[in-house]
Image 1 (cartoon, one colour):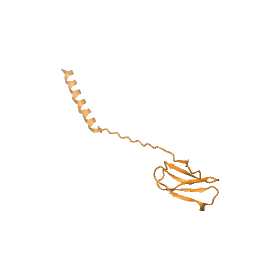
Image 2: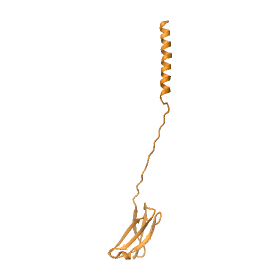
Image 3: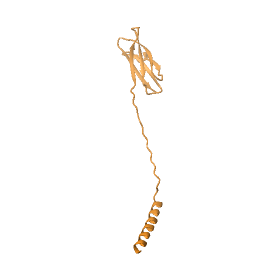
Image 4: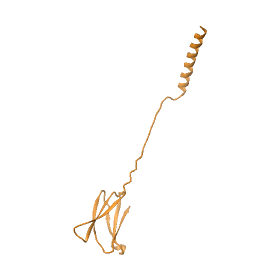
Length: 110
């Protein structure tokens, strides 16, 4: 009988201690996660030939800036001969005349 009283006291006292310890500990759990994916698509400029040998088309795509302009001029010319065209959203082509020395095209973000 002594063992029975000791066992019951141990169970009751242990239960009281465990419940008291559980009240003092925060029992809620939570988790959060986040991810950031960066996709880098390089700008692309391509010169396409047309049926007219004196005029080509400069086709642009994947330009990352929203506000930009194109500066086109003949190599070896003064900047006064510069042709400025406003940039557009999306893929598009602009006509470019040919020159013997070549052209310089700058994409200038504002």
